[in-house]
Image (cartoon, rainbow, N blue to C red):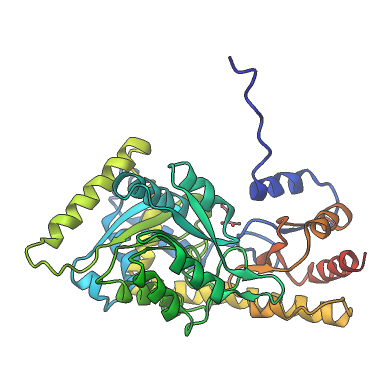
Length: 411
Ligand code: LMR
């Protein structure tokens, strides 16, 4: 019965971790999966998370009961506030449905299920390149994915004209997946002045914008600045079409394995005053609840309580902002050190893009062959696309990495 089942290759990113664990060389460097590391190369539990954990465990009502099917309401409300802003019209008008999800991937899955159920037949436009999992998540729900031009390899910059053309050529009512900030894998975001044209092109075709926000706070160090595109999108599309937001707390709260996230649906403003928005809101929430109940019953509680405590306790929120600055500034520092070392080594090529890109990743421009050689000869691991997770660099290994890159580029 099972003899013809094909064994698939390991997942591109998680496969890196497996290979690295089996590598017995003394010096090895993990620039694979996007996860923050401190300057000793160790995972970092954020001080705000430690404090929140203590508060939760001191609570006399501490327990491990089930959450409701749509998760912890205080988490969803706090998450909506940081992404849409305290003064969001959509929030004030009751046009946002927010539910907890199994991190960003779970939010994307809810979006895919919701789209395939209620807005079937619409293609999903995704940037070329994009996070590898985007395709699988939407295709598994029968949604056709179409790439739009994004990264121009020759200039290592945004192909804005190609991007806009593709949005304008897409059939009306398509869904356009946008990275809210810190684009994965390229680390290249549209400039603030480029976003209006992108969103106007989306509005002009009644498309639906679907934002993936996995790095809020990582691009600029500021939650508000990193929510710029989403907030502008919600405003510009308010009278046109719904906006979906998939929000992960894996990276910015360092809750990778706890799977904390939220899915938000922004309902457009209605011209027809007889439409009861609160009724629409409750109907959507009930449908999302049906999906979650049938798949995971209800989302995990522990991480949700921690993130909710941080979002809803002013002193912890303040500490969290500092923690994000600690992470984003160390990443920036390592970008500069790597670039400087490559310049000192006279490594052929221009390496300015390493410092110009933002968020966790640098799209180095190294070819798959160079990446292979980095791993085989120097025990430096990164994604075959040439994407390097910069937090894997530290004072102890940046020189090794620079010399390794220098060697493979010259080889
Ligand atoms: C990454 O892109 O490295 C992360 O988002 C981890 C993952 O799940 O792929």
